[in-house]
Length: 232
Image (cartoon, rainbow, N blue to C red; front, side, top):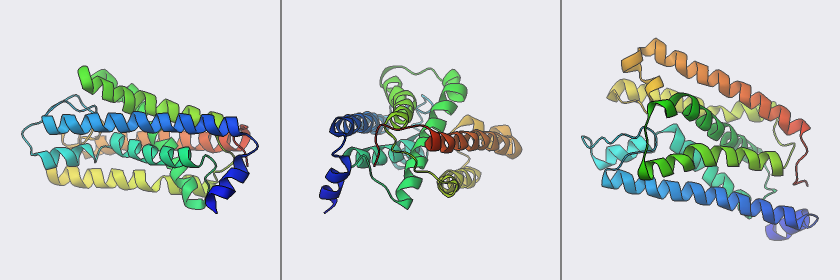
């Protein structure tokens, strides 16, 4: 039933549908390959794409926990999941799906912006760590945004969608500060309350939140006014 419905909805523009599937498959492949390389580096003691550092003073389980609690990895995992589902059905829709779609867009673009502006000047990556960071921090964010701008479909987002999309990033910030207060480890230097003090770290988090809110509003406005290649 679902495949028949999808075929009926997309029959008017098969070339656009095929192109969108190729693009979303490419995004998913880039993230998946980057993730596999990162996992191998974690196991073998190589540098991570987040900081370029290697901390062999902690066990493998802790290294994995740190990698998979980083906003970079979590946002890329969301984009990976969304891209796979869009490669299957570019016109997928639903209330929860719209939140997930906006979450993918918002999270990964904020990841790209924060890395380029704040983190990139502080790290010197080489080798496989550089390959990973190109995939996670440059290709994934801007290909994801570009694909949405071209293909859409639009309009899909409401102000309620925007509000719900901030649920998991806010939960991540709370979790990060609670965990950091207990363990003394923070995934990013601009959130390190040990070095910056709690007030300074919270101030930085709020600054990123303001940027995210502004960008979310822009996405909502673009969703309403910009035509998309894919339509119902």
